[in-house]
Image (cartoon, rainbow, N blue to C red; front, side, top):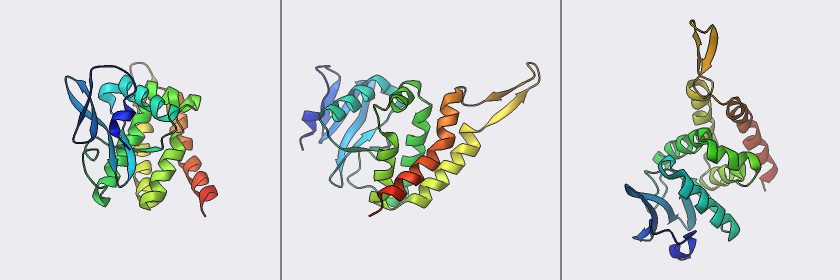
Length: 180
């Protein structure tokens, strides 16, 4: 598949170099690459609007893709050493309001894409480890504000915290139902 066909619009900021699709926003941000025969999409917070346009275009064209992080997107292969970073990046992106709205509305089948990645690279234990780490250190992190006499959460949006709490169960159920 030609990477040029994945460009969602006539925006002049889309650049293709070495068969990688970049978006120019002060610097070239790599967003799409074909690795191991699969289309990988980098969910980068630096250009969320461009990522959303790209997701909508890929889904409209019925092109299957999976997620990657900004460090692995330029590689030729997905190495086992990079899987933790990929999960970390793609679980943290849930905190981004615009991406979460896509997930919540059902426009982005986030759980299916995560499950496909887990099945492709046989890395459920690594997903479990990163999920638990983020639940404890980020999404569930809170402290008591003595001045206001209330708890303050690191992730302010209650809906995002609730979604993250149920994500592990949804992924596990989806993996069990999809086993052949």
